[in-house]
Length: 75
Image (tube, rainbow, N blue to C red; front, side, top):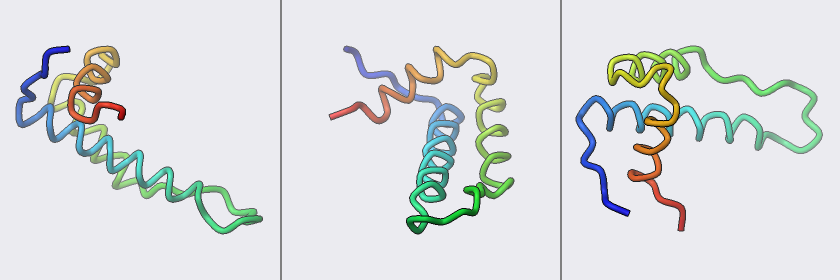
């Protein structure tokens, strides 16, 4: 599979998405038996949304996930 060269905006979008993903995972990995729902700071979601829009990836999930896979391939 050829490696894609990401633009600065695409790279920023991928990085923002990964930060969002890690934040959500951390929220769900809270203490066992915790009855509080996971909370993701609105600023993290807003950062990801803004970065995706700036890169022209909002509403284009197939292209975004192709870029994400090229940036962070599964082992």
